[in-house]
Image (cartoon, rainbow, N blue to C red; front, side):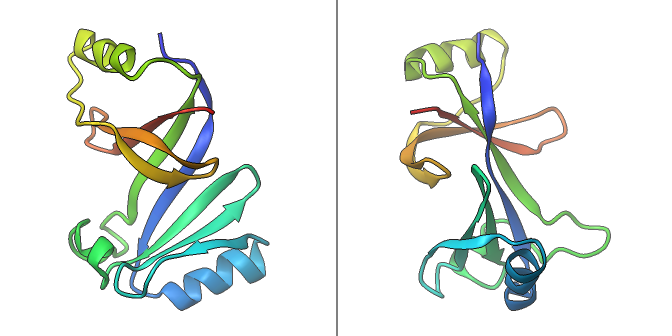
Length: 134
């Protein structure tokens, strides 16, 4: 059984990265955690114990999520849940038991630094990233 410990991060796609960064930093008080290259298009902001990732839809990473967000189109790329540490194989078996398709574990950066995580889809096709707590 999975045990959720926290929300690790969420990823927002945008056509206005400068305005989004100003809002989350200047208005809400987030701090800059990490930036990738402009071509990749990812900026990560510290929000308490978690992260808010801002992805420019005109970047390499942003293009993977489809068209630009609008008032009627989603801009949430995915969110990540931190779970209590358990073996990756046990996690895969848990999802298989519940008939949930899962890819392979990949090393990614989250609120607790680099670690392995896996993507799944909820019934409405929202992408949920699952990563074990350190």
